[in-house]
Length: 137
Image: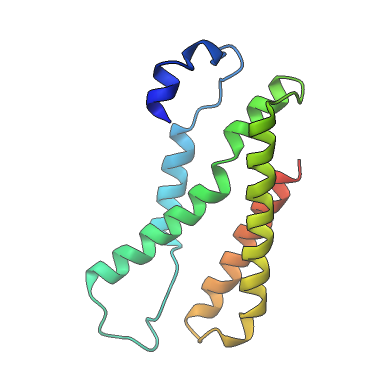
């Protein structure tokens, strides 16, 4: 994707509309993931290694990026008067459907969460719901 953007598709880039700064968003998501990360078993797996704790934080960071990754596209669509290319609108619709299925999965298994995963599960449900609300714009 990066090679296409720097090569043959460079003429399609409109710098005047693309003013969304992603740097602060990345730092905020990373900071939140460090302190409010998923807990996938501290109550039933007390002898976890540091790699397991790192994996929990990385997974939470990835979830946060999934939720916020569509913001630049939504911002760009808003600045261009709601006119987007067909491929972009299809991608956003596919992501929306994916999040509906993901939210449905996490809602269906909510009764099977272990004690340590309960807060994590509700956090995941909130993240998926937030993403759906953002994509509904």
